[in-house]
Length: 524
Image (cartoon, rainbow, N blue to C red; front, top):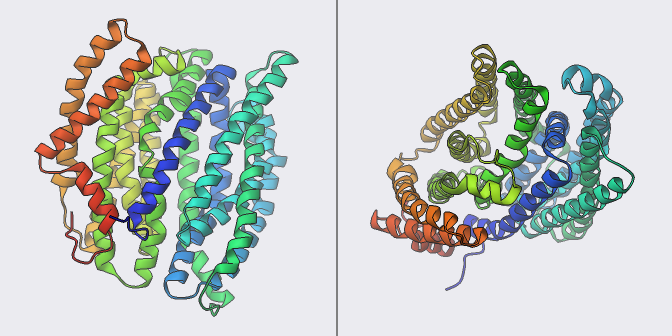
């Protein structure tokens, strides 16, 4: 049998194969940073990246997202050659916003470091994020072109190459710097950003050069006027950028508040920064490691739904939405159950830090709710409901911030206040998005398939696997071998239990990949 190479899930399979490698490389990169820079330096770097994400949302996020969706719709209606002017217009818009916002930000880095982030050690790294953002703009616009036109391989190669360059850059830079003496946390964070710049040079050059070759192969008309291109970009970019900006401002405020909330709850500055660094730079990345398939799913969904929306194909949108939600449950629940069962031991094995793996129950719930929220939001945005999603993003983010302030600060619950806020934010966003998707697509609610069966099978398999894993871990068996054997046992039990509940994981996946475009295929 031959795979259907035009299906969403074939492209997800292609992306997820490389995403597993990318996740592993990224995980190794964070382990490397944890050992070279330390938890407190990672916390400083986390503050810098919160500022970087705010500037990114102002200058690039909406523009890049619009390119992916508009390119898909233009190609669907036979306007393939118009995509070239779309890319050119998007780059001009990005450069204008970059000159207007990013450069002044770099010049005023001292103010942002001291008054906004509250940590003067971030100043050097804040200057370096300006050239990093410039390169990221060219990379992301061209990456959006490839995703929008259904070419998933070039971005896959680019992302893998970028992560390899980050690892090499960090190792070389820290080795050279250590020869000249010890580094403080601010200098270590600046070196991490230098490694990012090196990787962005490689990635942006690769994608830009490849785009110039591939654009010659675009087929179709070139009749979309500049006015319509600008209107199309604005219709996606403006609400998305505003929502992303407000959301990231709130999220960044949340991140800046965490060390202060911890200190208010009784921790010293050093202890608060260390706990923040472990949570953001070690535990959360470890928890996201099994999500290698779900991120590509969302990446591929958006342009495909935009194309179907342009063709007014509501039935296809409804069918693919149902499949996407089913896949989230089938992969998300076992991944989170596995991390909840052996997360502490895995964190100790990888990071050699006993604090890694704390608060796993909260983080697992937050992550799982976030998976559903992200998929549902991508559906809504792709069918023209960007403004509604933008408002919801801001409301959900404000909910999280208020919980951090009240529960973490006023009631002095510390990090638990922040975690409660993140969970409430994800649940609120996901629930409201689900209601809107049901109303606007006519999708039937199938909680048994999407949640019930995979949750029950995952919980049962995890409980049995934990018994075996505990004995292996404490019996003197090599720890990596104990983890690998237990993970394999878990997934075997999971598929068996899932089949007993009426869902054959492998048959369903094969059916999806082989026959995803067949009209006669039943809804999940």
